[in-house]
Length: 219
Image (cartoon, rainbow, N blue to C red):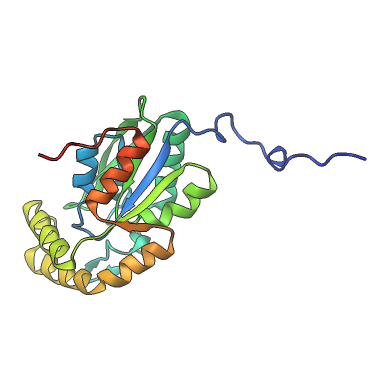
């Protein structure tokens, strides 16, 4: 009797694909919830998923408030983002686009390398879209949705967007108010896609544990 082949033998799997060098922590949350600040505190390799936005002249972009709806996943290159995370997890390096939000365009690229890190962070409002793919490929370490009081994210988001001159002030206020009202539904959707909710402090402790870092001592 012939022994059937192992499932992996049915496919041509590249060397190292089953044993990623680095695992990925996906971090999502409402715009203004502290994703970027968290990644800066941790000092681990990071991919900013907003850099995978499509150029503003890309055909068929979704529209809202008279401009492109940058909160719609259709405005974003999920396949390109996943390719980059896969390359980082298995080879330790990947070319990542550099996106300029005020001009709605990619302006270049940068090389991200993981070095000796065992954990890579990927943050952005569309991170939850990649949970299933990362899990199926065995590179997912955790998927976290940052959660803070909605009024706090509204205020921090507005201050950031005004400081960076992302869009005209009336547009920023209209968009911010709409996101404030939609926030509970957004979080519910991200949880459905596989994320767990956590405060920034809770997320920081969890990621430091995954990365083998000592938690900072309280001042």
